[in-house]
Image 1 (cartoon, rainbow, N blue to C red):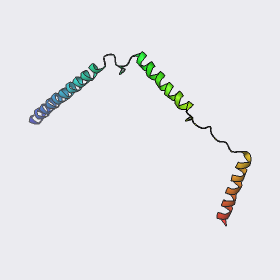
Image 2: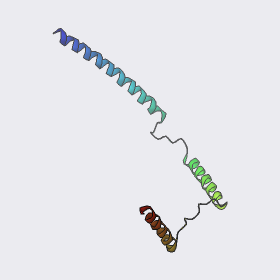
Image 3: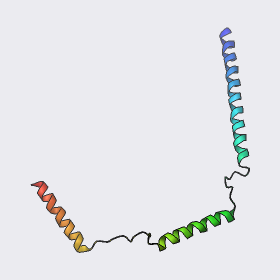
Length: 97
């Protein structure tokens, strides 16, 4: 019977420790919950976001006018592709010899 009472005492201590840990977690949740009252992290008005958006679009337009726009992708002709393929076949043939 002594063994059983020791087990019960240990379980009670474990329960107390778990309750304290749950209490600390609840306090942390309460502290974090008070940071944002409605759950969103936005602190800027819609008008402010619009001003920033318009300013960024103006910077992009200015950069595009100055010639820093991305260059169009280059394309290779069919004849060029045939030359490259023939050269590669020749390299493979030399390696096989």
